[in-house]
Image (cartoon, rainbow, N blue to C red; front, top):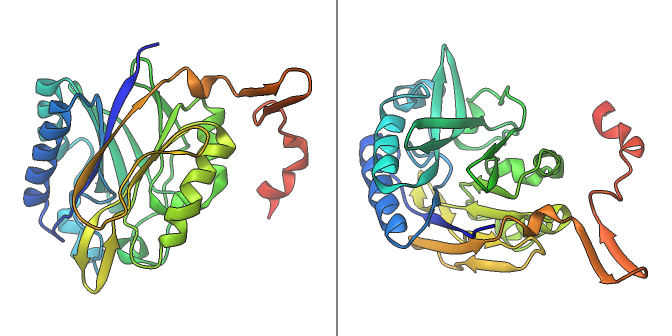
Amino acid sequence: MSLWKIAAVQMDCRLGEPRANLSEILARLREAAGHGARLVVFPECALTGYCFESKEEAWPHAEPIPGSSTLAIAEECKRLGVLAVVGMLESDGDQLFNAAVLVGGQGVAARYRKIHLPYLGVDRFTTPGDRPFAVHDLGGLKLGMSICYDGSFPEATRCLMLLGADLVVLPTNWPTGASSTVQYLIQARALENLLYFAAVNRVGQERGFRFIGRSRIVDCNGELLAGTETDEPAILYAELNPDKPRNKRIVHIPGKYEIDRLAHRRPEMYEIISRK
């Protein structure tokens, strides 16, 4: 199995200025592709900004999927031969969703709508995601998508693991106060599911909120492959081996010390999760 080089673009974006944000996304897409990345991941709401004060304020900056911005990204992906995951606000009828879109040279390949909504920023006014978790084969690498607060719910990543994900991407808007999430949560999600995890945060300030950066790409064993401890723009790169997360059985001492976090589950004991 060939290695996959991925990029995590830690960037600032302007609230309510999708044209300026799209221009920055395309520039960073070109930069990451120039460094050999095959998949480039951008933060939550990278196209729009996050700290809107009402649905009415956010609505003019939302787009249908597919739409003009995803078309522009698709054209650049086709030219560069890459795939991109971009956070945006999606309009659908009269509903507003916090979404992540997977775009390739043929257009929109998949979308995800944020399921778990904190009382923060535009999420106060969006509709909870209404589509089941899904995994998408990129041609050798199987991708699952979540968004920010979804990472705080272990069931989300577990569902993606059970669907066969090799890599889970988490576009985020982590503000000041999320340091524990950075330090512990992402590594735990990767380790407990034996898969790669890329959390891609933004930087900058919006309406009194400072976003802390500190994006990271984590190995299947929870070890850091690439990360930054700053709140400055950056692009992180890592090479992933899709074979690694597909073997869930870890043999430390044959016949004496073997761990399999897939086979050793006891789903019949977890019923309370779906009842409470």
